[in-house]
Image (tube, rainbow, N blue to C red):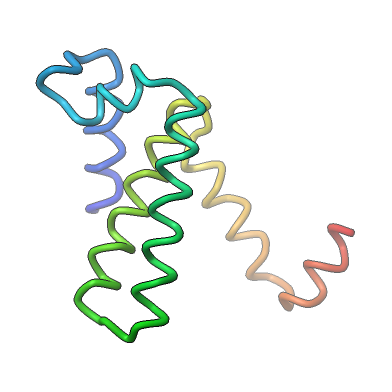
Length: 102
């Protein structure tokens, strides 16, 4: 699966050479910079969606997913845990799930 491969690639680059790997560079920049980059990618995705630019929207969505996975790895959050939460949410309506969190 593409996401599994990407997650493993990100993990393998965590302690890599920042001069040879963009992913390693992100890890070296630390949490604050990774959060800023994730925020920038979020805004770029929103702009692409609002401008009805399908190709750009796809590219920005891919960027956002990549930066999310880097951020999760930096925070030592296993993506499987995220999937487990999502799976639990599918067993009830979204409105019900949201009210249970409040």
